[in-house]
Image (tube, rainbow, N blue to C red; front, side, top):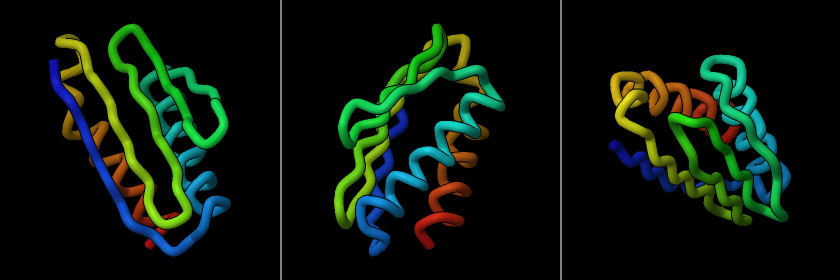
Length: 91
């Protein structure tokens, strides 16, 4: 099992953070088949091989993902996709 934890400061407000979280989640869905839904300001994602959440705040976004053993080989790619989307949307 592997854990990914990312905290990123931003100045995009809640709206920008929500857009960034949606962008990350859509990429996870399209690339890995991960499902997601919003619960207030927390985007919860799940798949048999990965589960976690993206919590948005006015000046920070926090991502926590727990990958099963079968997803560990994809950890670097998964984490790189997350960082790329955050860079694009939040700077």
